[in-house]
Image (cartoon, rainbow, N blue to C red; front, side, top):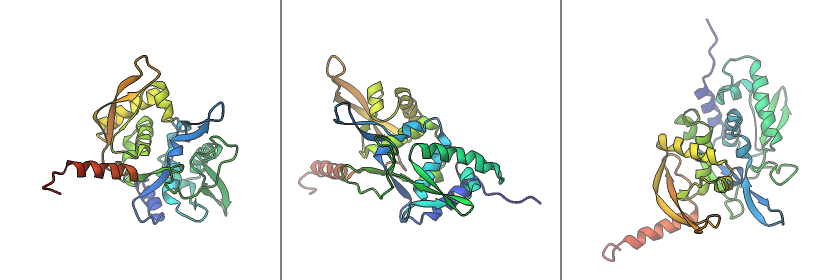
Length: 276
């Protein structure tokens, strides 16, 4: 008779259940994707956030997302066995001590980016999340606080369906990165620039954006809605036509207050006097 071991799905569901969140989603600041930095002369600008440093470490991204999903208050920390984290992130499925080694490497990478802090908690490690921009623009990462949604503290919400519907397994890293970037736009329709500078403004590489778009469209989580003329002073005409996109359920849950008001006004304008 062999001992039963939790599956990856059971491990994830256990962690999500620990969160006790009112809704089945969790917030992440936009600066995780697109960080605010200062230019050469001190002028504000946007650049790649810590997500760009995780594109080659998919297990580290999964662990970070789970930590953000689970932690809701107090010191924003969580203490669990390495074996549970390893199964939930799909790194190591056996119930032995080797899990500690493989998970520790992922935590170390996240800690170097200033995204978590490890604290000793008995014979286990307590994982405490730090602010989502990590070490971008600073030498020491800032303690985590609940995002307010103010203009300088924009966040988006990631649904638990990311795991429950299996998207953590269906999507490769380009798809996951573009999905997070698209949700951070907080609009019904939006552009996803695929030129080098435009992609960098999203915090991603040009090829990553192109592959991520193709992947999401193949899985029917992203659809093209049309084209839009935008200003691009880097080309001779000064204008260019770009594709516009829209996310599909369950990832279309991030509309800003201004966007909701704009959509409501458009719908109202379409009503005839007799319908109003």
